[in-house]
Image (tube, rainbow, N blue to C red; front, side):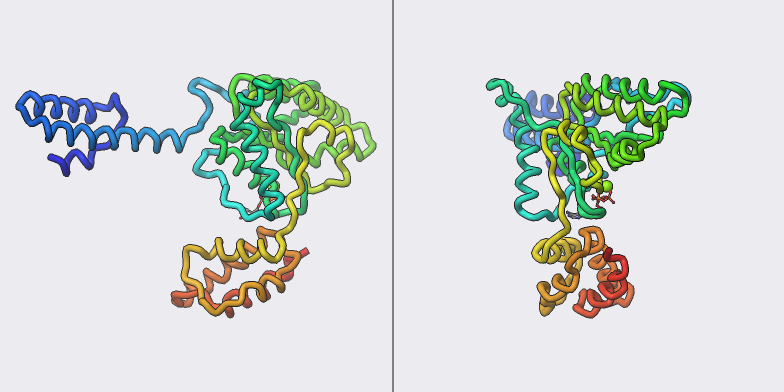
Length: 326
Ligand SMILES: Nc1ncnc2c1ncn2[C@@H]1O[C@H](COP(=O)(O)OP(=O)(O)OP(=O)(O)O)[C@@H](O)[C@H]1O
Ligand SMILES: [Mg+2]
């Protein structure tokens, strides 16, 4: 009976749990109080384990929430990325890590802050060279604070019909007021481009101005995160609308070593590799390229039926990828 109970899992109102409850009750009636208590303990653990597991998987939007769509094609204006698909294991220099943690801590402490008339950092801009973790930082924040993650779909927002892009943007921002989430405006540089191109491209120009106004008036319970590669081209008007602006730099030597080792953590690696030596060669690589080198090395080892990643595998992967280092 105990073995059977250990294999039961479910939500409180699942039939299987109701049947299990009934069995416990019967055992009690029969005077088997000890057994009944033991079964109850097992059942409670399994029900809660299941529930917290579900909770972990689903900081989804509240039931019944619909992401607004564009009127003409009915395409959602933002994409919800499931928690399981959020990238969150990052390697960052300590200083940057601290800055990102501050955002997370302030959000978690938002009610305490409100007590003192203070607001958490809510509008964040990440900038820096490609492949160093700007988009990933946004995902990791959502993962850590357990909020649903929405990525704005500019291709759905921008309409060729006069005025519709503005309506789309307003609709999306309005909907953010009703549920907390992390909204990512990825590759926000298009704003800078539109503003610096000098030409009045009509609708695009309007969209940019409206977006800047919406940013200014943002009054939602969640976080808004924008990313850009182009620090130089974003003007003051864009910059001053953010509560925090954080550079995500290329990995230094220490971070390169950590990136290599964490990427290779699920496979055996030779003990005689001098990590610092390899990391020095990879100076200037983006984090994405370091991860690629580590994965390529692991794949070579596996394909050749070698159970261990050797220095040679890493050096080969390095020389094959060095051309991508820009
Ligand atoms: N700091 C990091 N720690 C761990 N992995 C990283 C880091 N930065 C980048 N990566 C790896 O590189 C990939 C790309 O990262 P990401 O998409 O966040 O880059 P990005 O800065 O947004 O680049 P882009 O400017 O091209 O959009 C990630 O999926 C991950 O594998
Ligand atoms: Mg990105």
